[in-house]
Image (cartoon, rainbow, N blue to C red; front, top):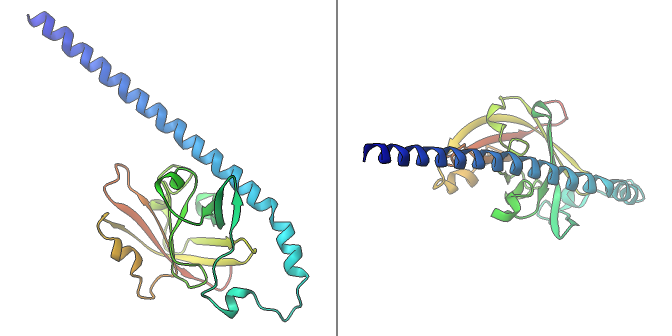
Amino acid sequence: MENKRGRVCMALGALLLIMALGLTLYNVWDDKRAASGAQEALAELRAVEPEREQKSQSLPENILPDYLVDARVEMPIVEIDGNSYIGYISIPSLELELPVLSEWSYPNLKIAPCRYYGSVYLDNMIIAAHNYNRHFGRIHSLEAGDAVCFTDMDGNEFYYSVLSIEQLWPNQAKEMADSEGEWDLTLFTCTVGGRQRVTVRCVRTDTGVA
């Protein structure tokens, strides 16, 4: 009887090890898939930039960008493979450059970072992303003063400096969005295991040097 129990325990242990290995391999594959898909979308977004820049250069010099006339204007969107993008984000210290989808959903988070709330023109935008290594999985290592840049689909660049990093619980949705004018851009993702949200608060700067 004891030998039988031992064999059962060994079989169960081996099964658990196989399942753990399978999960690890799936996570590695999913991370690479997400990174590859995001870079393909980014390349397509950049392919439309010259056309947009040429169009903007043809306007009279005294014509201001729409967002400077009315900050409540909707952010321009570019459609790629049925997905709507509002621009891309760059984080030099992490060597990250990623497209940003217009609306967040769980399926969208599997593709690229998503706008969770707000607008870059109103200085209240929140961007959510999965904790894939090549999405927002490393933003916990950012430090105060690190530079962040967001480029909209009209080629307008908005520069930020990291102000602080905090961890919020999933039920703290109000704290995530209630900036009270303190933060101009927020980035967040889940911690490993999904218990909390790594939250990076940023403020606007005048130039690309934070």
